[in-house]
Length: 390
Image (cartoon, rainbow, N blue to C red; front, side, top):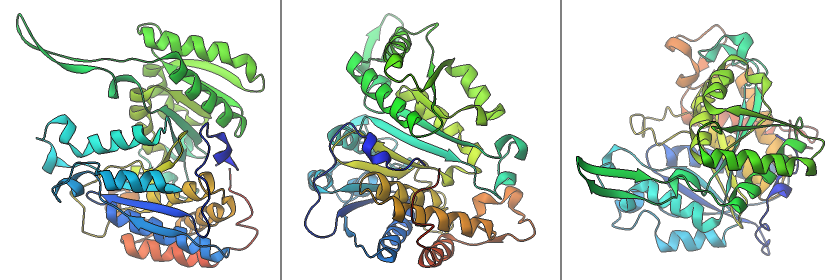
């Protein structure tokens, strides 16, 4: 991850309070509370290792709030989020609430939280850790060395445009509108250009400009802004061919810039490049308060069993320390600890292809893997915590 990426945010960071910064924990649904607990413990351990402290607060969101008789984004939760230095979210949603109307579903709470925080850029790093190559369904030589970032515009497109139902001659007609204003496109593009500058200086816009008018605007605006970033190489790729190329030659990509839906789909596809979707963190930035979460969903089928992979949430916590608090040394301690534990052969079940551990691999649960990472954080050296690895 590039150092000092918190400086990329277009919005000013939250003003630092007297004393320890405040991180709001939103465990949410399914495995969310389990992995957030793991991430919180690792953030606190890294902070302590470097002589700092974090103050943690908690609040309900999503289905957990609905079960309490509250809306999916309760007003007190929103107030706490807006007042925090950063927010860490586990997951929302699940089949229990699938029959609710759209505005009452758990996911509506997440969409509204993003809108209220003003986080317009979702950043999803995809990295293949050394030693995990065999966990991917792709050939090890294809995924080895993968290190890319998906920048997904988060507040526009189909997820926020006008939608509804109407009666037509042959029955109901439904519509979702893909809508973007130029300013939305420009701020996401600038964010991605700055991200590329701090990495390998290569930016690929993913679009469908041969069909969609919205994609044509994205391509026009990226071309218009490119002269401001002469040190960044810009390329364009249709989303369908990008989906294929992503699993054939992932090392060809550095920063992928996508509108909302394309970014959602491609970043989930990219999970195979890291061995498991449980490995992927994300950060939603650009507003006053950053929102951090693992990419995976609530996984209700394994909730409460203690087998969830906490690494995506733990790495999201590392992103929070670096990008919202500016503690790149603490983030580096967490990332180095995760890499060391994986190199030593510790895995959760999702990282064991076919369920049969290879020689030197030990399968453990959520808590045991977290304990191993915590121990590695305690052993973090000043050199490891000096800067975040690329």
